[in-house]
Amino acid sequence: MKYKELINKLPTGWEQIDLKTYQRVMNQSYYFDLKEGDTDYALQQIDNSLLTISALMEVPVDVLKGYEITEYIELAKRVQFTNTLPTPSNIKPSFIKESLDITLDNYLTYSALASTPAKAIENIKGVMALFVKDNPTEKSKWYSKSKVVPVPEIDSMNMIDVFTFFFFVQALLKKSLKRIQQKQTKQLMVIRMQQKLGLKPILL
Image (cartoon, rainbow, N blue to C red; front, side, top):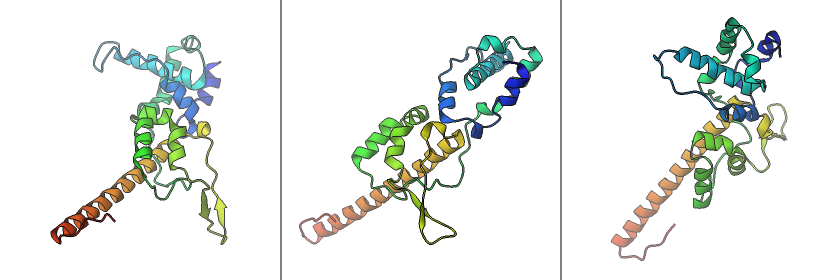
């Protein structure tokens, strides 16, 4: 692929990268031998940028190494955004559940599927099964009837959408756990009161 063709097609933000491409980038092998301040650290960073571009565009590294050094540097600049994680949107996707009837089973399932950010993305299909509405709908702004909300195709979700999904899943999980804790605290207070009154404890 010629340099001009490549640089015109190269993504310049996370919203242009889908989940499938992101997973390909994350599965790439990178160099981390040198630390900032070491001799040739800058060259290592350029090499890693080329590896990122290779994974993004599915172009062999050897092809990229055939470009001029100034072209190398320009390509590396274009993918600098990949050095930081995507920033989630503050708009909650309509297909995520409003509340969660959390049980020990589904909490343990989520904990196993999403024990690390990398695992959560790898197991996103399983996570979505826990948190996506069965028949997602939302009220229309213009009509009295609700409209069906399409659940996105997972592999085609861009990385802003993926990180937004996980941001609101975490918020929903915290809310559900807090509700359980409040219920358990209330039950404990009732049991103690029943014990003081000499009554047989009855769970709510």
